[in-house]
Length: 372
Picture 1 (cartoon, rainbow, N blue to C red):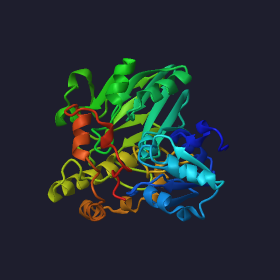
Picture 2: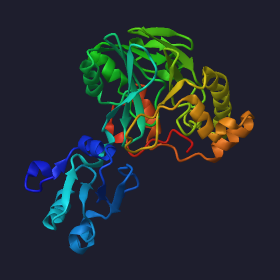
Picture 3: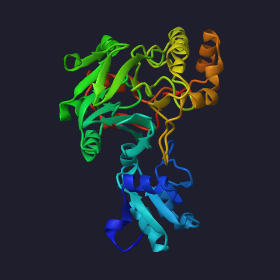
Picture 4: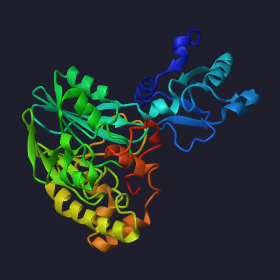
């Protein structure tokens, strides 16, 4: 990277994510005063030092070398620090848009789901660990749990010679803002929500086609079946794609289990939901078969080189809570390991239900939908 062109003194979040996914060694210099969530990727070296301290004492820059991405909140205050590094001969660039830009970055990963005549894309948000999906078959595209950036999905479908015909949210999300309504409006696609989501209160219910457990619809040549998966929430509904892959939403993840306390937060309510989740996993998910591909709704924040799409047999071995047969013991194990609730989660639910204006500032940090 040249340091003589002002254009090259910045790096977009997408460019940064692609370089990190390729395994390029890089130092992330985080100059925010508060850096409780960071840019995560294998091989990344993190240095945290507030901008005012670095500029007041340039010797604090000693030892920072190699390729350096300087990140602040919005990409506005990082420039002087990057300039000071470049003056020392360091290959430093400002992360354009800062952490606000990083949180919205999307990356595509192809999934080998074993579906003849169809392609599945996993859309990863490394800043939050949220996962969404695009199923493309015979010129039609289904988008599940989309992020707010509607154009990303429109362009992905178009690049494959398809148009978005169906949009589904697996439940009313608490940890991130849904792009489902905006995408359906942008494309004219059918917007589908679980019928129990409508029972929770959705202001735009007239624009929604309800999905009940067992309902089926087709996307090109692929049959999609709704599978009720209550436990994380009462409305949590998965999608079984061609009998080969389960979009599990927030029920079961590649290495963990959904938290049961976001809809019913009191201890008794969360315990009841945890018992329901135990039933869901043992009577609805695992019996689908060991070679069914799990397409989870979340993973840990960070850049991944490939898709997060294990077979259920692998998940069963990896997630120790799945070996607990007693529902009460299972519930206690989940509740004992509960992390803090997501920031602004009640307001996020209100936005996704149509009761509060869309506000991108509500999204911050990684997701907290898993018990680990």
